[in-house]
Length: 349
Image 1 (cartoon, rainbow, N blue to C red):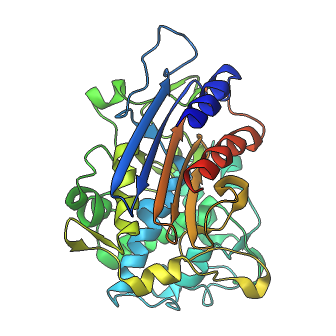
Image 2 (image 1 turned 120 degrees about the vertical axis):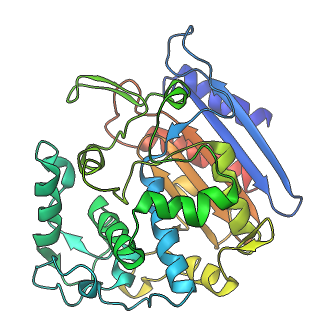
């Protein structure tokens, strides 16, 4: 713990972020630990970070809940991995519209030729139409291409199959039954005061606190719940989800995933194109997971400075939530990934 304190206190001193929460779970011992550091901003008089501070977890949304909901549908034989997306989203009208499958969405192997962030000044209907009509730079499955668009389509697919909004399904399938009471797509009332700010945004011309940091998700949120970003959560809540994964898919005597599905999540799905990702989760990414975890380690980062890592082999989990983007986003993720990796190598030693 002393080593972790040293790493985080130095990160705050170096202004990598003003504060963070670190949560760990040891599945073999059944023990959780939560550490908290710093303040909401660099102003020493700003609100101190607590174990229950709420963070915009950004792209962690892609896995919790979006991919996890899709994996549940696979687990319950409602959807097949090779299900064609055109069966449910006929609006997709590019050259390969009849070849896109659920597998491509869960492995980010759709090679788009545009960035959603470049369209942030448009109406949400225009953004959604661009997603439906954009052409690919290569056929589905031939190129790993991580982007928001893929997860937005995945979220929309889940909504259409179950005929409910993504946020409602997340609450129904995971958050409510698991007791993740401070995990939400909508920050209202007193929750806003306990939500850590992410940026002083020159585009929106205000401090972003309690509203979605990601621009395209913020725009699309007017007409839908995007599956790419927009979730708010705490270290305490996310540790519950990791505990479920590390307990063979069971939490409080309720099964959420089968062992067979967990094996797929932690298996490289795209080795044939010489890339590495699990099913719906990132897999063995040493640049932020470190070098002491096992080869069955899954995780996900968030642009705002958050990360969740789950070592299914060693039965250990890590949550690190921060506001790396405060007060302005950095040019790259090198500094935050150095912190993530350093902490992970201690936790998974």
